[in-house]
Length: 257
Image (cartoon, rainbow, N blue to C red):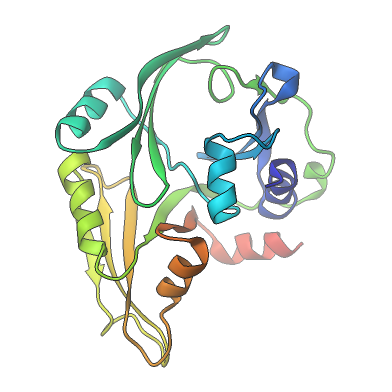
């Protein structure tokens, strides 16, 4: 609900730098957006500017702070979108061309589990900092030169938690609509504690770059952590985003310095 504060935390504690902004100053009347980057990881934080209903306001009202959009960079947005729709995917936004002084981008969005979506973004030699309509942030936060490098490189995986009995259905959705395949799976015999257990299927794309573990709760002595997430989040959603580093000890130390 406070995009600027969340972005500042990512900068001061996680080693990101702000690269783009969109808000009242750029002509946007619905929300303020702060975009940060580290390595090949890009996070966009959004806050609604006014209380009227919009996708950002509605999501926050129902779920609180969370992940709304897991976007994929693609080579042929229209082809992927059209194929997914023919196979039963639900459209959020059909392909459209966005332009500004830096060039053009084709973008479309598909509904996935819960209230999450997948945006498909095709960059056509776009030279801007993020997407059309976003202005570059040229001044660095003064705290950055005083902080150690963290070394986060790329998003490793994005976990989606589902209610009991929905894991296979969601995994099949990725297989049937986006041509993903199963990379790995575990059940409650392998992943459990004294009190909590889960089942998981990891779906990945053809090149095994995008990895999406799909979790569901399993019976244990107490309520599964997956079920707790579903209860408190208000349904299916992204539980966590894992980021890859070549030196995890160094990265963790840098978080604390």
